[in-house]
Length: 265
Image (cartoon, rainbow, N blue to C red):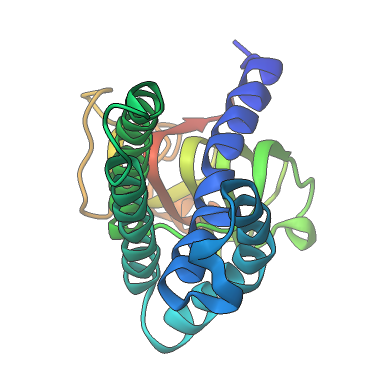
């Protein structure tokens, strides 16, 4: 069954919108309050809100580049996590320093907002931190992507998707007996790889959280981290196996599902 692309795109868009504020607003507010440049702390709430956006646009890419370039992706998430915690601390101070009698309603609204934002940041931070710990690259764009090469020259050595679904259909490719290596990964979503019916497949899978279903696996809801070799039942002799196409697959998903299917021969 084909996935509902509209729902997948809608879910990805809502997720991206929810994360947008964590990078396009919160870092700028945290930096502005900490550094107190141009009297940030003494500005009105609306002014601080407006100033936070351009500061975040300048700070977030620079912080992400420097921490990943000279450290690791884990350090990048740690740095953003510190800024998110600073932002929460600032909100807590602002919501509690007013007079209780004069601003009871304002304080109540601020505390509710603070609680909601705290949960959102903690959940997002935990999820992104776990995703980074899986080691699956967070590159390649988002959405529903389908790759269907028809010859060896069109086969890419690496296929990447960040959020969404990706299908790599290799059934129409006539591979040579020499081993061809293909790597495919989806950070969050579903990865499907269709292999030719007559190909001998050397398979290595990695998933942070989710399930793997692949050819020749007696347990469709389990998988092994050890490399796996799948030989078509039609190749009964050693000579036929030597002449058959050989495909080396390395597939990874951070959170989601891996599905490896063999074409009909």
